[in-house]
Length: 230
Image (tube, rainbow, N blue to C red; front, side):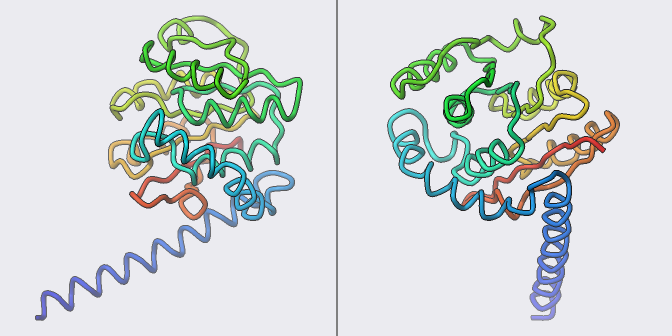
């Protein structure tokens, strides 16, 4: 009985601490860039737009567990509309590719480059994009793009592979491919390995690291973070 009371007390304390941290991170994100005070409203609107096609995608192409969550996708579209980047890199193809390339069509004059470490999955993504009448140019196998020397990107989404060791290993290159005034979005910070590695790597690169748990937490516990310029 006593052990149960102690455990419940610790869990309640952890929840209160998490709520404070989430609130602090959300306030910092709103202050980080002009217009970001509207991030919650923009994310909610984007979710409504994306939900039908996301549900189709996780039924016919992928699954809710493997695909980028609806929450992350909505946050990503909101960030795109608020920050309006012209050069975007998508590391790890899938539903994020649909979001980014839909935005590029909407905004006009936007370059999107997509890379994946799985050539077969890259082709699946290409087929889905084509079925939605979206551009399928600039789609690379990650190793080939990584060793090339493209001009850095103003927004990078890093969601590579299914193994977090691979994702952590690719993070330094993802940072190099992000302009100094650009933004790097990372998903799946529920992973202990990723959560313990990514913040320090981004900060050593001179970036602010903000958890976006409030805006991106999904039903299986996944959530995103954003690395921003200081």
